[in-house]
Structures are given as C-alpha cells and as structure tokens.
Image 1: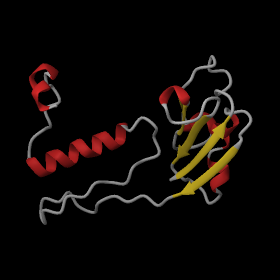
Image 2: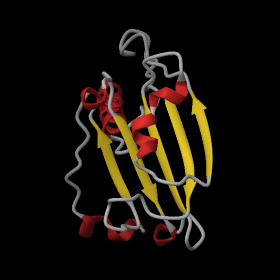
Image 3: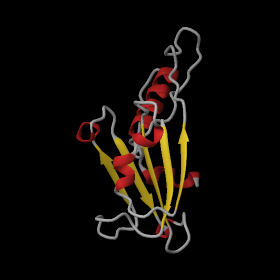
Image 4: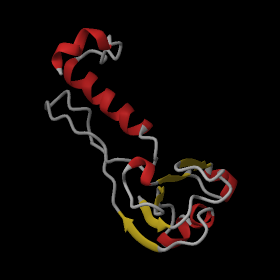
Length: 146
C-alpha cells in the first residue's frame, strides 16, 4: 500500500475550487491494475488552517518504485507545499475464524471511500455472530441512548 499525504495552498485544480474532493483514477486508464485514490480536505472540515488543504493519494503497490505508483494522482494536485509518503504492508487472515474462533480483519485498503473496509467489517460481524448486521435502525428509537 502506498500513501502520499500532501499539503497544498489551493484546492485541487479543475475541481471547481471545491473545499473537498474525491477522485478515483481507474487503474486501466493509467496502465495499472489497481485504481489510484485521491481525497482532499480543507479548513471547512476543521482539519487544516485557513488556506491550507490536505490531499491523500493512495494505491496498492504494483511495482518496486513507490514514487512511480501515484504519479497520475499527484499530477492532478498542482503545486505541493509538503509531501509525506508511506509504504505499508497489508495483511489478510489465513482463515475465516470458524475453526479456531480467531476472527481477524484484513488491513485497511488504499481506497479513500472505505467501501472494502466496511465490507470486511460486515463480514467479520457475520462470521462472529452468524447473522448479518441490521443497519435498518430507526434513529428516533435510539434517541434515549445519547
């Protein structure tokens, strides 16, 4: 997993000067198997100082040169004030946990929308309890829980 976190002094160009953006670059469009994910946030989300934007570009590693992995995503950002990069190994459980009652989730993936991570957690819940998690909760019925 490769992750480049950057500071910008402007919103991502060509995104309508939006305070936040989420861009998914389909891997095959840039000669890759895996997609590249770009996410940006700003002061409107209370995560930066006024006039500063943070962007995260991430993908699953396919080669041995980490910087090459996210070039198409970084190219969208314009001038970068500061960049921090991380290469992380990801893990997957070797079994479903039913035989030894050891239920283990997978590592977080490169996506910025957490869809795969949510699917993993829902699968983990079902493996542990034997039933699907009921996400049809009426908010009015849990008001007393606050």
